[in-house]
Amino acid sequence: MEKNQEMALTQMRKSVEKLGSSTEGYGDPTLMRFLIARSMDQDKAARMFVQWQNWRAAMAPNGAISESEIPDELEPRKIYLQGLSKDKYPVMIIKASKHFPSKDNVQFKKFVVHLLDKTIASSFKGREIGNEKLIGILDLQNIGYKNIDARGLITGFQFLQAYYPERLAKCFILHMPRFFVSVWRMVSRFLEKATLEKIMIVTNEDERQDFIKEVGEEVLPEEYGGRAKLVAIQDVVLAPLEG
Image (cartoon, rainbow, N blue to C red; front, side):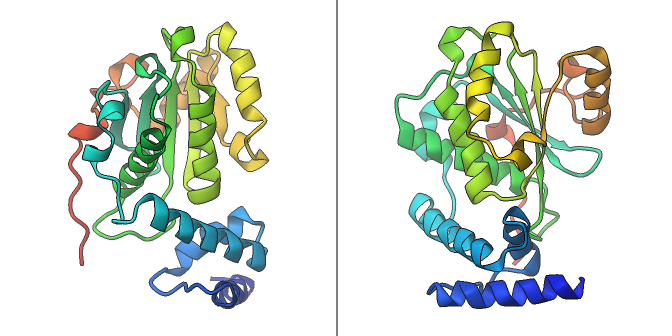
């Protein structure tokens, strides 16, 4: 690790302590994600880290969101977890045609946390390092007006930005219909520049081939040009972490 990164990490740990919290139990890769997200500004990274700790304690006091807490969101089987991409990132697919705006906003937020946690955890090889990333695929094929959920999309991306910094490797958006362009334009206003740069809207054959190549045919379902089968997230069983 470069000397300036070590100095930044040391200063961030001190800043977190000044805010009345602690970085004990968190490795350098975890803290580096917060530093990178805040352009290596130690004080801003420390504030972001403490806000994340407080949010996490309130949102998932038991450490995780169980499936029993989010039955309505799991029932449509709209999220799929496909294994690791060519670059060893877990691949999560969202079929928007199976999604409808939630009547229970609290359950929806817990659902977002559950799917992000489980997707990231699926990349662990026995133990979390702290810098794992994911690839998201948002499939808009066959959506109608009843499936449009701008608030839900904004919530998902804002959680990634505020509470899962540097976890998103890439997000591919497939089959965007013309009527959705104005919705996406509105959602984009809530996204940071760094997030927008990781989002690719696939609109032509060259982009589709790049998408297939980056994700990998081994994990990409057949309907997207790969050789795998769709696997609903609730059907994925993760190995327990080593002690």
